[in-house]
Amino acid sequence: MAKTVADNPVLPLAFDRSLPEPLHRQLYDQLCALILAGRLPPGIRLPSSRTLAADHGVSRNTVVSAYDQLLAEGYVTGTVGSGTYVSNILPDDLLSARASEPAGQHATHGEPSSRGRRLQAMAPKRDRRHQAFLAGVPDLESFPFDQWARLLNLAWRRPDRTLLVGNDPGGYAPLRRAIAAYLWTARAVRCTPEQVIIVAGAQQGIGLAANVLLDHGDPVWIEDPSYSGVRSALAGAGAKTVPIQVDGQGIDVAEGERQSPDARLVCVTPSHHFPLGITMSLGRRLELLDWAERRNAWILEDDYDSEFRYAGRPLASLQGLDRSGRVIYAGSFSKVMFPSLRLGYLVVPPGMVEVFRQVRTALDDHPPSIAQPALARFIDEGHFASHIRRMRRLYGARQEALLDAADRYWKGLLDVEPDDAGMHLVARLSNAVGRRMNDREASALAFDHNVTCQPLSGFAARTDLHQGLALGYAAIPEDEIEAGARRLAEALDPAGRPALDVS
Image 1: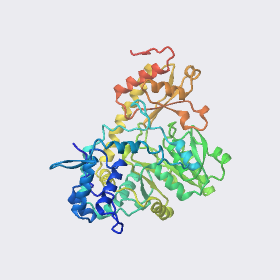
Image 2 (image 1 turned 30 degrees about the horizontal axis):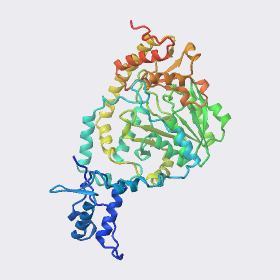
Image 3 (image 1 turned 180 degrees about the horizontal axis):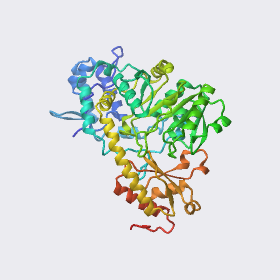
Image 4 (image 1 turned 60 degrees about the vertical axis):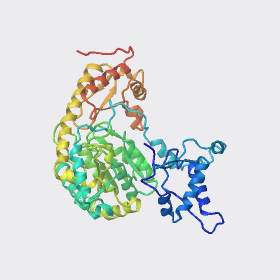
């Protein structure tokens, strides 16, 4: 099928009637330039002479004269009853003129800022990834897309005007009500719908909080190790990140006070630390809240995957313990539903609602409206809770499958412990493997064997303290878990034995 501009027929043309040059020649010159620049590529159909004349307020004879000249010189071809098309083979003199154009004349010679270079270095690689064992990816095959499509259709068949204008910086009001009700029931988050602010994912929410709460260069405690998206969001807002070690109870508040007593903010994942999987103890939570109150500082609680807990009762949020209004709670639907949804939320203290809304307006006005009404119905009609329950059962079974494969294939290579929550497990390098390679080298060897497992040191400032691999299992069928475990064993075993114990 020929390429066409029929769906967007208005070409970027301008006519100046004060010039001595006739209009048909102006039109000819502009169309030549568009063809030479590749903006009208070979094979594309031009607007009809009648349409182009009407769009630009010239006579049809003007357009016909220009088209005839283009046809005579080989720029376009004409087909009776079909239209006028840019030629697939341009005249030789045009091709030579294009070839003689100085190379790089349109190149940009400016330099990015220092901050731009730092952010560039923080960007994750977008190279090819294998299914096993990439962490943080939900199972997409089990999502109820039929229900989701129905809800999208209901919302946009006759959309409310507020959806079309989208002028509420906090987001769609019914979605904020649904989130507030869900958080109170599931996470003991104490909030009204007015405190909920819809954002395009948790990372944008962290950046918004940093812009509201921090001045340029203000120090922020971050967990060491921590998710790279937290560091880049803070850096984008001009904050100075201070890595603070995580022990068996969570972030070490005493070490934080020693390293950076004037910190204005701390970013934590208390329910399920990423990537180590630690749950912050009650004592450490109270210590952190006391620090924030004493220092007039803020806590950003990133509750990225608390829905997936497989043993014991779900833990209450840190925000639910806060009595002084120092906690900003961040959540996202990317891990629960699908990543490209790009919807998350902040819950901000009552006294900060208006400033967050106004800063949100200054930065990007309001969140995209397309998915918000469908998501509100998805939660209100119970589909969200049902999906979470199904995924808990599925992910729990897949964690068991990974542990079983680890026991059979990775003895003497990796030490893997079960986790009561989350979507990945941490595998520590055995002493025998650790003497031969570090975790980055192990990750590279695994990649060569069609296995993706992120090194823990890639998330850490103190790489010597964190050597191991993050092994995601949520999106991986059990047969691929088995095959991936075998390939990883082959990558790490010095003798290259294909299977360690398959009985």
